[in-house]
Length: 271
View 1 (cartoon, one colour):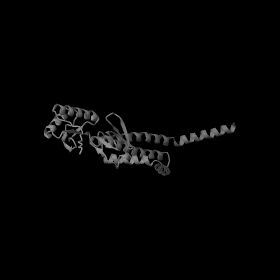
View 2: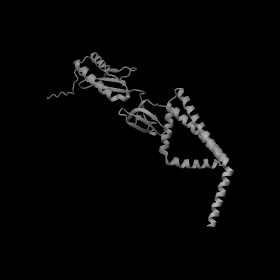
View 3: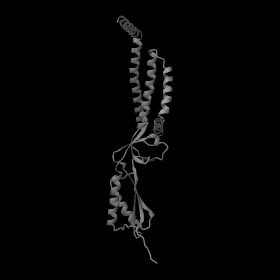
View 4: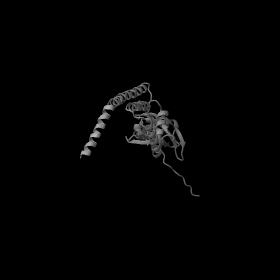
């Protein structure tokens, strides 16, 4: 019992001595950390707001602001550790060794981060653009380092790893989406009259682009019909709604104008 009391007393004396000797250094380190955190946050916000104020992409602005904050915070931590007598050189070496091993273990994740960095720097698309990649399409909602999130017309969130985007064929139609239709009419129809009827029907549909006019014309000659092509630009969030409205308006207009929509026919002769 006496021996345990002596050990406890020795431990107590050691803690008191350490507190007395290093209390000011520890307090100073805490103050440095708190002040440094505040300064790092302010610098990050200033950098982000400055870039946003100059109409730079919001994703790139947020990334640059966050990176600035982390750099300043890293310098503050090094200063705070040095203030209490801890050498950061062995720590940096250990972090480097751990980082090498972790990098080999998470190559796929690092590939996503590298691709995300490439997207943010090169900006092949920005938030609000309508893109089609990897067989899916939607409006860009967020561009993060590891992944990009799209929102389609059904309000479904689609998360795509960035490594699947970089190097792939990317369709970017900015804030609009192209709708393509094909209508077949009889060979006896007047081309100019049919073009006018289709154009008038298309113009009755709401949600079409005011900047780009619809393109309407003869697309091909089928076995039993002249095929008219219709290309319009519309709101990507109403893609199918507008497509269905266009089909209904065009069909009704052709019927009213007595334009024949033929069905496939095949003539067989017996010799």
